[in-house]
Image 1 (tube, chains in turn brown, green):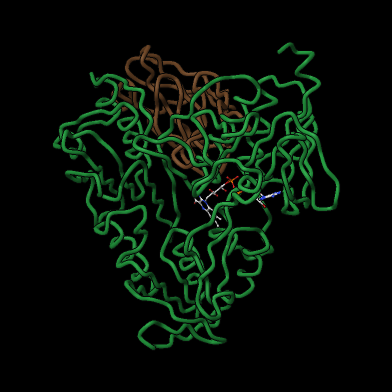
Image 2 (image 1 turned 135 degrees about the vertical axis):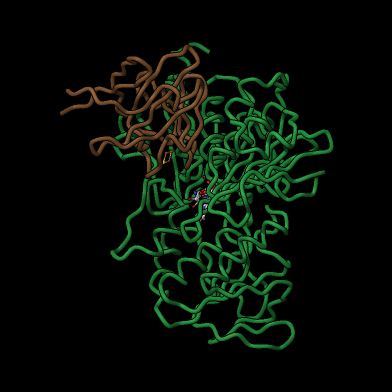
Length: 104
Length: 417
Ligand SMILES: Cc1cc2nc3c(=O)[nH]c(=O)nc-3n(C[C@H](O)[C@H](O)[C@H](O)COP(=O)(O)OP(=O)(O)OC[C@H]3O[C@@H](n4cnc5c(N)ncnc54)[C@H](O)[C@@H]3O)c2cc1C
Ligand code: FES
């Protein structure tokens, strides 16, 4: 596991999300209402869509293509048409920078 | 009803399409312990229709169906799926259905999820027009999209336009005809239909509006004014007819579709309807929706109702279409008929924009997104909340829609839209 800097906290305002590409990983970074930052894989498990193009509400992200929803804290797929969860990554914030733990 | 009594009951779902499949699965997951039988006339387990007019027609190799659920899901949920079997009649008094091959099946509750079939063009030679609803239809059409050949699409709705885009990509020379002046006229304001039309024209597809088709002949389409358009293949996308015959013959109330209440209950006790065939209550009347998400959500909801969960249907109509790599989404009413103003976020000649439809009190009532799913997601929530908005804020790209919705003080009005 390696900690990789992915964005500044200022780049992800409260209640918003940001799509980033680091070390070949497409990640979505979320700034939840409880002020925590979260990270998941950005590609939906249904067809091909970037979750960061969708809608964040509470701790749920809704896919832009067919409105499947995931819990971004656990990665759990919450409704149809989703059959598989998304991967979640550990996040740390240090001095206004967001770090994500990526598998080596 | 006790769990033991429930376990003795049989629920039959007629129609193994998207609504039927989701109903059967949701019914079991919501705790119904009895027997579930899912019966479909088509010779495959429930599959996704949207790719049939899109990627399916473009695939280099023989395309495969996308199923909603793996076969193992049906077996693990103890759903008896029977495909290639048509239900011929319902005997309400005997609580029994008759099947094509002469057999029958007793039921305690029945769900009609029989969907629609394409409307036929009622002119001489109309049967030569290929419609596209099933795997077989799409496979047949796919083989006819040969580079250099001419294709005429009658009907400029989403399916006709998607087929036109696919045929064009396969090197056919394509024209699209419609009785209306603009494309997608049933769901889109003319000023937006024109943009979709221009997208097609930009790719070399010709569109002719306000024309009548008089006949389809072996190699041409004959127009009302006598002109002949050469056509190796004619595609008809002129809407659908709901499969209500079973219900009507059994004396269940129907109109364009099978009439249901917000829970999917028909006029007959223990008989439900869901998906595209169901005509359900909407503000100011009843409606039928032809969309993927509706079939999924309405099917699942009625399935849960049949398992004992009472929950009324209350969704906002939404659909998408893919044409030449542009993702089009329409939510609510984007026809302009009920709108006092249209507010754009983003430029209409840019890569992405969203047109919001506002009524006289500046409530959002609909939206059209051109590569703008986030804006359409916002519009959906604004419609659900019956939210009034300052047009200038909506149009300002520096104002985050997440923030607008998070800070909105509009009451969350539960409404039947
Ligand atoms: C080509 C195509 C492209 C589409 N693209 C999009 C899109 O991009 N976006 C979108 O939002 N929507 C799209 N749609 C719409 C969406 O797919 C449909 O609204 C949805 O499939 C309806 O599902 P349903 O289960 O209600 O009905 P259906 O899918 O019609 O299923 C009903 C099933 O019941 C069976 N049946 C009928 N009568 C009987 C009987 N008596 N006994 C046994 N079985 C019976 C039928 O054979 C059928 O399999 C598209 C539709 C088509 C056809
Ligand atoms: S691609 Fe995400 S729900 Fe379909």
